Length: 221
Image (spheres, rainbow, N blue to C red):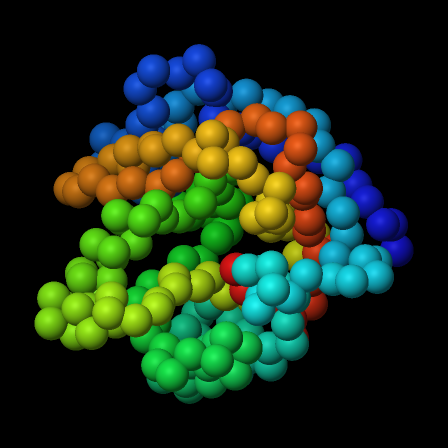
């Protein structure tokens, strides 16, 4: 098993003045128009070969065991209740959260093109968009209770029908990211707008990935 790999990533261009990512542009599912990106080859460390692999509690990301009842995308609706319960139990155990609420699922698939892997380096939320997401999902009153304490928006990323062989998920260790690396990016859908946080190039970034993720594993971050 190789301890590191070379791969091309697509950072957001520091010279870009207006950053917009168009999703399903013109109403065509899967059509994406990305802002100017800077392609760069980076070295990714293989999580499997690290003496001290990252864990969620200390690093905000980690590879975990997750035995899922869902094996085929076509079975999602019939198995959704059991699958979501398994995710709730898993995230509760891994994070120590008193309450876990699931609000979204995305099936990435290069073959059909409707939701291909996202290739630009980004984080899903900034502080304000995370707060607004909480309100949208829970409602203002319940979200207020959560905002009075601590909350996190956590991704659980896994293979579905077969081990990952193409477009594995690459992660930047949070400790290697500087405050100046973040830039807001407007995400424009046909009927709404949102924001993600793009990442600018930084040679100090520590890139990680997991070689050959199996069906009973997941990355949380």
